[in-house]
Image (cartoon, rainbow, N blue to C red; front, top):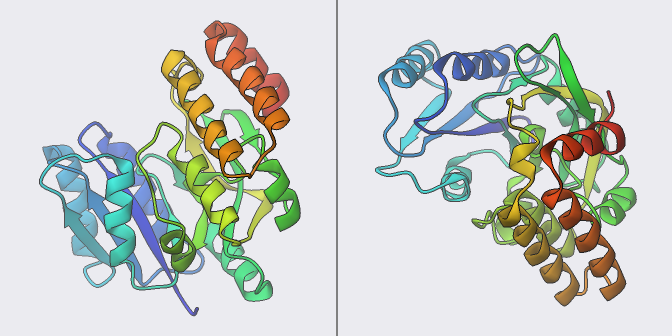
Length: 272
């Protein structure tokens, strides 16, 4: 595992300046990638295409562009992209986030020192307008055993900054279109016996957006929570008691007023 791939998807609603920052944060890594796979999920716009063309000219041997005829959603794009990644280790990157310069180096060191680990993520810092003004930090349990138990109640990895073994994702069925598709994937990955680790240090600035708390609420979100935890219960990953407790708490949060959900996230589920 002497190198790693980067996997990113972009679609027409993304902002060109955000995409440029995301690109730059990968090119400026202390350990460089030799394989950057970008999936264009349907036709883009002139501004996004310009940024992509600039980066392709600057990194013609590393950046590989795959253009899909129509938008099929993130899960579909990532499944197509992961097949094109030539390395076993794959670093996920969203088109509007910013990686710390040593993000990938830190993750690679864990893989080098821990042969019992198949996925590595770390702490993310959420911001709305400027990465110099952090709204909150999402820090997660570190060791594989802690990660496994945590997964029974909450999403155990920060998807925007995860690096994983390609085989772990493919053997677990890959991404499946779902409201909570990353959480659903991690449950299946852990059920297949793969193990995860979380670095305590911050690895990525995540552009949360002004509506970050609103997106985590509503009837559809509550229904998705119930569906996911029902799968976890029916497959034996959690008990009936855990199912009842988790769905009650999570659905109540999803259906609460936005101001209350924001308060709960910032005081109970995040670190300021």
